Image (cartoon, rainbow, N blue to C red):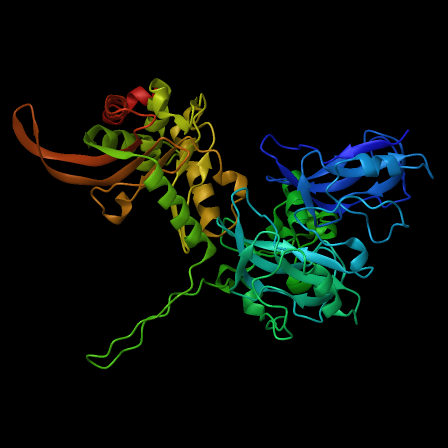
Length: 542
C-alpha cells in the first residue's frame, strides 16, 4: 500500500520547508534509511531519510520550492500502483515534476501558482530565498553569474543581502542562466522571481508568460533586465567568508559544513572551483600534509571606505541620496515597532568601579587570561537575571513568558547598521569564557560570517558605547526582550567616600524596561543587584 510522505517538522520553530535537492527521482527504488531529499528549514539544511521501502511514485514539491509543514512531499509504494485517490483526496499544495508521466495533477501551490506543465522541461525557476527566520525581503548585492553563463550545481549565483547579513546563494541546478529578474542593488520580497536556469536557446518570454500568475520580480521582464555586469575579480573576493586571522575564503555552504564537522580549517584547503572556491570534493580529499600556506594578510582586500564629499565652492549646497540597505530598513522597522508598541521607561544608576578595576587587573595578570569590563557587565547581568526572573521575560499578549535560561544579546556595530549576536547560557560561563564568546561572535558579525541562528533567542540585551567615550545613553528594547542595559564609559572623577572627596572611578548604566512586564520597583531591584556584583566582583566568582 502506498505511503504518503509529508513535509517534516525538522526544528521546533519550523513552519515551512524548502526542498533544496532531491536525491531520488520518480521511479527509483527506495530502501528504509535512504536519504530522500535535503530539506532547508528556518535554521539549517538537513537530510531527510525515508522510513518506508518501495518505489518513489510521486514528488509533490519540486527542488527550490517551499511548502508548509505536513504538505504532500512524496508518495512511496509499489511500482505501477494507482495513487490517483491519494492525489485527488490529499491536501497537497505542490505539483508534479515535469519529468513524470501524465498522472492526476496535484492541487497547485498557493505560494507559487504556476502550472508545471506550462514550464518547458529542464527549466528551473529560482526565487528569492528566505535566508533567515525574520527575512521578508532580500537585496541582490552582486551577481556572480551573468545571462548566458553556464551554471553548475553548487555554483554561487549571487550575494543576497538579508536583514541580518550578506550571504552567498548557490544554485541547486545546472544549466544556462537564461534570465535575471532582480538587478544588483534592487530588493524584492521572498519568493519573488530571482532567475531562470535551463537549456540554452529556451524561449524565456514563454517561461515568463507561464510564470506570470506567480511571484513577480521587482524589475519588469524586459530584455534589459537580465543584463547584469560581469563581476570583477575584486567583487568576487568581497563575497568570500573571513577567518579569524582576517584571511578571505570562498567556499560553498556544504563545504563549510563538512569542514566544520571534520574540524578542518578552510584556510588550509585549496579550492578547485571558480575563483579558487572550495567545494565539497576539496574538503573530502583534503590531506593535512598537503595543506597550502596561508595567504599573507597583505593580500586581503580591505573594505571600501566611505567616499568623502568633494570640496565644494563656498555657498553651494550639495545633497546625496543613498539607497537604504535591507539591514537598515529592517532595523528601522523592528526598532520602530519596539518603541511604539512597548511602553518604555528608563532607570539610571552610577556604579563605583574602583574594585572592578582592581579585580580586572589581578585577573589579567594570570597567564593566558584576559577579561574586559564588558565581560564583567555581562556576567553581572546574567547572575542578576537569575535573581530577578521578571526581567528575563517576554510579553505575549494574554501571557508573560518566563525564560528560565539566560541567552545574552550583545549589540555589535557593523558597516551597515547593528546586529545582536547571542551568547547562549551566559550565566553558566566564566568571565574568560564570556570574553572569548563575545570576541568570536562580534568578529564574525563584522565580517558577515555569523550564522542566522547565532543572532536568535536572546532573553536580555546589553549595549555598550563606553569604548566611544559616551557617558550615558538610552537604548530601544530588542524585542521580544523585556529590557536592555545601556553601558557608558568609566570616568575618573571626584567622589565622596566616608565623608571625604577622593578620586574615584564611576560608570553610568541605564536600564530600559517594558512596563507591560517589568514594573519600576522590579527594574530598580535588578539594578541594585547588578551594582552589588560590579562593585564587589569577587561575589561573581564565588
